[in-house]
Length: 460
Image (cartoon, rainbow, N blue to C red):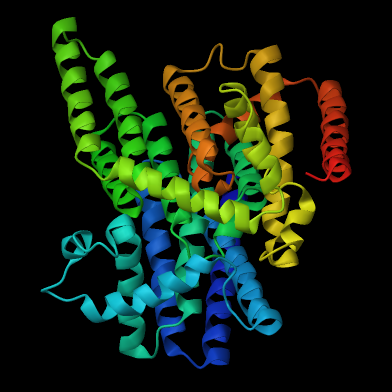
């Protein structure tokens, strides 16, 4: 029986791999660009190596299958969006920043050499805010130009690769608390109904940041090892150079890891306090010596401008901001967690309607998830018997979400910490009696529809 199960797994992995390679081959032939084929195969190899590294001490078969499955699904979705946008709108991009990042990839491709490296770009004002992302894109462009020609689609294949690694890691995070079968289902649901599918089709850095965060979450929840600590530091480094603000928050996750580790080793309290103080001091110095506050202000201003220009619900957002302090924070946080809202938002302004349908599906799914989570927190007390690492990270994630929601409602920046919130949603859902679950589904569905009707009625 066991051998038959393993055989089925290997067949699933092999079949998905063949379909993925065939899809990449077809796209390379249709677009007459051999670089798509070469880099596509390289991306598959990178994803497999990354998966095997993460699961070096565990059974990796399910993880490999999840990675390959979602790379295939996200690449199909990316292709549909990319070519659909070209057909209906004559542009390949949904978000305005995508065009900027594509142009940057071509610029970096010309500069990347032995005399102009990563840290040279870190000193360049134009790239300083996201040097890791443009450097990665530049390397892809350089290799693409070696074999054929760089294109927006080649760059988007790499984004689909990064996105497909997130549900693979979600499986690992879930496996710490659940069975292999349940963890597989949890990862599949997250891969299909989170904001990952939508952002995996866009040439933006947010999905890369999300990967660094879920990798960090997985490492922290795993047992301490020196190699894991090195990987954690690398993730923090990459996250900082993807977006400095999130890199600083990543330092907080690293401190959690060290706090839990040091707490469980036999040292005197004086030595522990000294170690804690040292790392906290290093973190404070890093924050003070980074352009964090300046960039935080710039992001706040630019996000506010984009919010007013791009969203039909901006008047409601402005109204929430005028509420008394404290109440306005709670209101803006709550509103940010049900975006895009109302659903008609994706069909208005500069938005692309059905090409952003996965964004809407994720927003609705997240609304229901929060409903189950709140019930689990306050009625089922789901965190009561959970380990300290999970509890600290959950509240750390809430602080992060509150701070980001004050700036803007878009999930692009918030979704980095969603895996730990989603995990708690799963704990809540499974802790609730089936009869109560049904009532909650009905009640939350009624509430969502009522909010949509109310918003349309008052026309905010």
